Amino acid sequence: MTRVVTRTDDGRWLVVDGRRWRAADPALPDDVRTRLLHHLGVARSAVRTAGRAGDDTALAAARARVQLAKTGLGERGPAWWEQDDGARRARWEGALAALDPSGG
Image 1: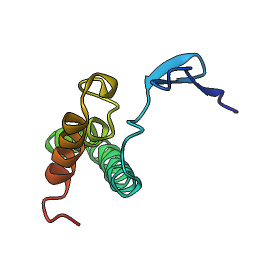
Image 2: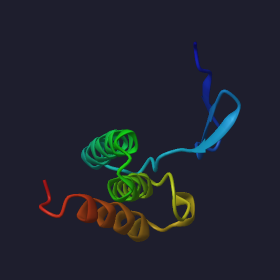
Image 3: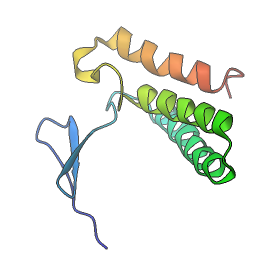
């Protein structure tokens, strides 16, 4: 199955098979984007694992990590295009600090 993915002219939204999704913040530095996407992948995997195991506590924690990663990417929370540069940076730095307190 081939998905049709386009981006709106303003760059704020991705359209996947007719459904609109908020695009990640284009101001994210590449290393930050990479780290947040890594955390998102790990958290999504944890959601699947916890769901299969029926572990509601782990499932809630994993979903919270997905939310943090997606917020850091700018895909959830306040719209990145309505934030100034400082608020955008604070958003992704805060998400990374919560996801990886050791900084690495």
